Length: 240
Image: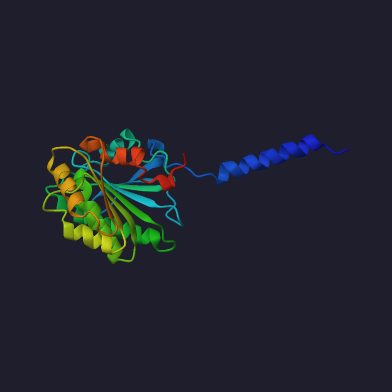
């Protein structure tokens, strides 16, 4: 005697398993899924679920001045603003071992990241996106430059109130855009030097190919969060 209900139950279990194992997974930034590594001149935070393969992008995060001297503080900041909780991406965050003296001190950590990413991309290239906030803007630009120069194209560079006077110039951003990187300048109405300079560059570079500027209604520290949750940044990778 045949058992139609048993067959039906087996079918639904099969469908359920397909849904479970083929669905997108959010970037889990909980402590249990994070691990830190010490490179030559910096510390990085990565996710145990990172894949470094295929169409799944790797987001490189550069923190601001209050968090950039400690990878634990960087991780807390990412969790506080829930930046990547709903995205199907890999994540690599970087910090110094101690606070830097000047923005250009990001050069050595960026060279470490270049070596790290070249090794990961050797077998299977993946899209690279860079998110930088405040003091991290120099690191974001410098990494975008050396990755592009070394055959690892940077799809997108997001400067969240991260354009520091004298360090981030019109010429540099235009050069990065000319390499094919989409440069997004996210500013706010703040009074800090970075806020003022970001707004100035948004105006000065309006209409430049591969450069987009948006002023968001947020404080300096919340610019990236607002860009993600209110202006659709990274929405193509959202699992919600």
